[in-house]
Length: 156
Length: 296
Image 1 (spheres, chains in turn red, yellow):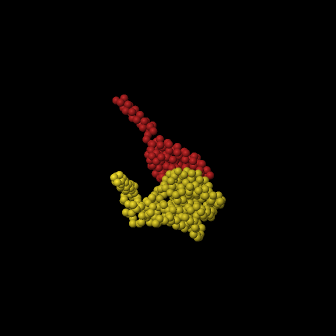
Image 2: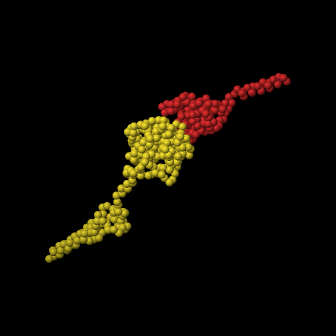
Image 3: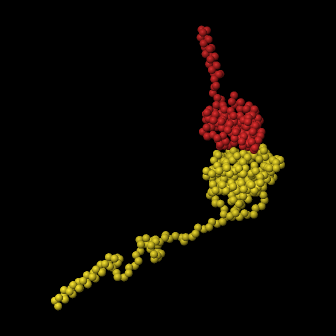
């Protein structure tokens, strides 16, 4: 009898361990809500909620094909070089590719803005470029730590 | 006596035969009617057909068919010279929509790109094959971007510069516009070209900078109007719809004194959609400039 109870307890413990140790399914992220929360945060020098970008711009800005991204939001302030881009890619692999495009975006913007908006350079140096499953979160903010705190609330 | 009769008979028979031969030869070679008179000129089948359709006299020469009777041909009339109505794009009663802008290209700086970024109505086309721009771009650096446009088929081209180079030497600016327009008009001879005004700067920016002032913006735009007249292209007066009564960008719509909010872009969108040259309009033929008073 005790032997059976012990075996059941052992199996139960093993099951619990597997459940907690496994990677688990990536969290679903509300792309628009995260974008709104970032735009409304104090992480930026301007009120980013005033600068939502039209839907057709992101694909050209981050150079992806339309079928690689299921949904996205973008905010961009032309005066400060700050921007927010939250996207749900078509797959985890597509998300990694998209993240690579965001890295290239940082390099391109540094070239363009170095003389035009020089205060944007340190912001670009501290850009957030996170991949969470199918999701890509790219933020160029004056206060990267504040922006990261908002992102963490959706990814952890 | 006996020997003359056969000879006479023979002679008569010869004469008769000769006459018959004459008649037969004439019949064979002389025409349909056996006649000793000169035959009438033979009409060609085409002339017969023409005569059936027309009561005018048959021309003497029938070597060429008579032309179809039409109105008296005249030389193509010289197009009536249309006075140049001034460089300002006229206002239209019908608002231009997505169809009008589908073949548009936009070449300019970050201020111009805001039209794309904040086009929530999806009126303007998307993509790098319609938008040729960069942050900080000036007219002096425009030609390489125009090179990228060479393969496109555009019905209208919006050129928007000024905010980054308003303090530059005017001679150099005029030359740069000339080079750009040379290229655009050569590559896109049928495109309607709009030169978009420099947009206003805020009072704060104008007061705290020697390179970005209200007066420099106005001077730049005055130069643009002259170029429009010289080159027969159209002037888009975005400045007037975006500035306040004092000629400044309102302070509550800008963070840096130059760029402005999407809400303020709505004024510009509305202007673009109501001030345009309809597709198919021919370029005016004169550069007579009516008297124009006042500045920007």
